[in-house]
Length: 247
Length: 154
Image (tube, rainbow over all chains, first blue to last red; front, top):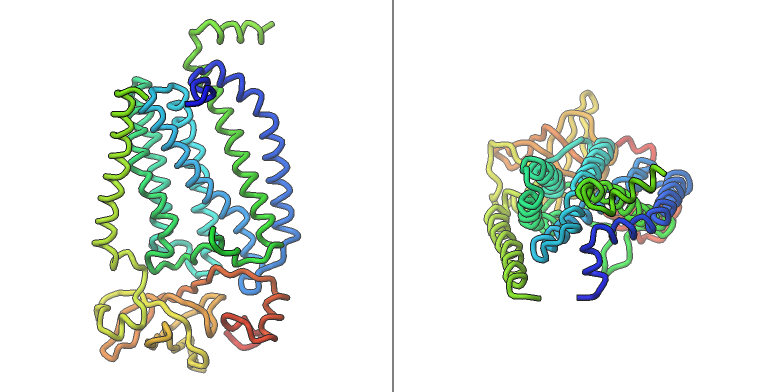
């Protein structure tokens, strides 16, 4: 294992490095999200069939991607916490859940708003929509389990196992549109083919997806820093830090 | 990696693979029930139950839309390019409903294999285009399916 991997295990080092990374990611997230939104909503051409209502894609797709990416991040962090007993990994996993849940709610809500004009229905129990709803419930279950257990390390272990079991839902969400008949259309973006969308439509979408990744990094680091301070409040370095800040 | 960590890593992998296999088996057993709709081929082969609520999905056949001039009743055929099914519906169709468009209709099959629909949903595909490109493709005869034509009445 490389040296930085073990350094990550130190809450103090983690607190310092996230402090240095935060401003850069915040600025990147702000510019990418604002720029991508303006480009997508005002300058990208309307769709030939759906008209302007397709523009909700610029919020729907990034939030849906993030809800799944955050889940994978949480499960990996949970596994690292289980295997290497790394406290920081447990904290990362814990901090991921509420962010992922909020983005899953946004993805479901924007999808429903999109579904009404294009499909004629707010909600359909097809495989894609149902598996996405299960993802949201997994986030809720993980958050509830984590707060129900008093001991921090037991809570982290149990939630990591739940997160790992729920990981099976991620490929189901991804491939549901290919495996079964669904009302939701198949993916526009595939790794092997060029997108079924012109560049003037997908470039702002790509900008927004990167922007949302930065936004996730910012919120995760902010939550993580709080969590580190809370758990390490009795250590000497946190006390020194607080003394310094009070002046 | 020491022995204890290796053991825990094995445990983690077992959890992930074990739950994947369990869910894969369940999904395989339920595969027909997870499908949102029956295709016209499945209906014509008698795979869809009659007299109970089902969904049927397919492409609206060109020139098959028959409207009742005095009511909202509409009849059209849907196809998967192998078989087709007639759908009867009373009500307002979604904006995206048109010939060549994929739709999903919910209703019950009557004795003659016709679907009496209570709800019609439009299914849009993964292709996005600007109106100019769509017009150019249509002029070149390269359109994957018919674009909307203004003033056609549906």
